[in-house]
Image (cartoon, rainbow, N blue to C red):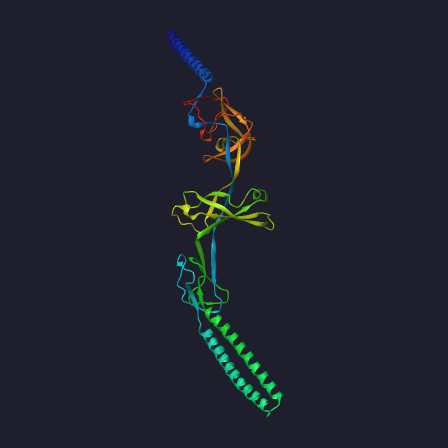
Amino acid sequence: MKRWIKWGLAVLLLALIATSIVRTLSERQAKQQVLSTQTAQTTPTVVELAATDVTQATTQSLSLGLPISGALKAVNSAMVKAKVAGELQGLILREGDRVQAGQIIARVDATEYQARMQQTQEQADAAKTQIDIAQRQFDNNRALVDQGFISKTALDTSVSTLAGAQATHKAALSGVAVAKKSLDDTVLRSPISGWVAQRLAQPGERVAIEARVIEVVDLSHLELEITLSAAESLNVKVGQNAELQVDGTSQPIAARVVRISPSTQAGSRSVMAYLSVDSSGASNVSLRQGLFAQGSLSIGQLSGLSVPLSAVRTDKPSPYVQTVENAQVVYREIELGARGQAQGEPRVIIKGLAANSVVIRGQVGSLRAGTTVRITQTTREAR
């Protein structure tokens, strides 16, 4: 029994020693963690910013721009329609084909119209023959009246007959002109030079009067049709310039206001304006009717304290900018004004910020207020 007691006491002693060692190590580790946390809390985080990451709020003259958008439209376009009914023949043009003004597009079967032309011409010839007969009768009766062989009443009758024959001939000639016009209308010609935009009929198809056959557009003169609100229209004038970005093109294209509608649209009360597009500015890129374009219309100049538009943050109820004051990030609420361009950079006029304040640009992202920052180079005003 004494032997088992000794072994039990030894095991108990070892267990107490192991427990004491584990507790000591745990306490030491906890102290180290607390010390590390305190050290991290007392050491401030420093964010390094390059000179290109900041700018200054400066007074600049901004070119005010009005955002515009719309679809390109050809100034000159024509819908070639059938002027007479009949079977369509000779239509070989398709979308994208080049045509010249006066070029024959297609024909309508002219058999019926040739027959009408011949019929009216023969009627005119017959009426001309009746004039000759009536003229000879009138001449004879006048000679007989002069000699006293017949009364003047017979001469009056021949005069009326001659006048009636002449009127009939004139009517027949008018019929010839109408028939000739119908015969000429069987030939469809392009009224303008351009390209075929749509082919709306097929050879052999019987077309009615005013049936659409093809559409021709002249891409050498394009314009942009924009819709302006009543307030915006007050600032738009003929001759103002715009810079457009057209779908499919990488370079901006110049445009100029050439017309403004004198009246508003029913219902919306909007005003239509038309800008002439400079096709030469597309650098040999072919513009097409219907392409969507958007850009900015220059409507004047305005000077004021401004910052880059990208530096304005709107993730709070009021717009604000991140500024650097005493090497720390400070949030400053601002009041936004007019927007414009300065040296190709979008800027906005603001209130609520001191001139020459150092403002963090938008590409830096959001920094926590109070964060210590260090600018690696001398801050220069953005140009």
